Image (cartoon, rainbow, N blue to C red; front, side, top):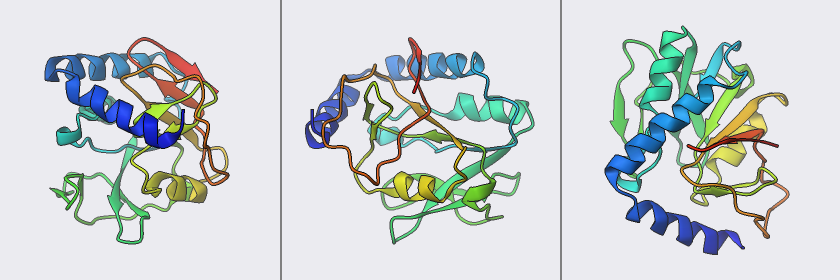
Length: 186
């Protein structure tokens, strides 16, 4: 399937999902992450969920990261479709932007080449590790600036599609994608 069709399909599937199911699946995804060999790094980039779009609730993952004394990096969307990345501290102020994305107001900026692991938001992914987001290109631009060996981990309520047929050269594939049922490695 092409991205446009898949995007519409998965937005609809999320809309139909109950809040309880989304909460339970989010916890199951966090539990799956605990089985992975990804916890020896220092800098972890994680998105904060858009409640209105029924995104995966990343608060449990955030709690795990803080419990393991990891440096947590939060993204902030820039007007030019890039992300600024800020260290989460006790003084970090979180505010929703115009797209209802919770993000830090400001703080200690961390360059992408310092980040070891990125939890990547997505709507859908395929069995080759290609992902579909909302189509603005924020994460592809950001991942391009990360170090070559950064671990890219998608988080999805749903299992892999067979193939996304209109993948672009600028699309950056995932290393892993975690669903409530399984861990995909690419």
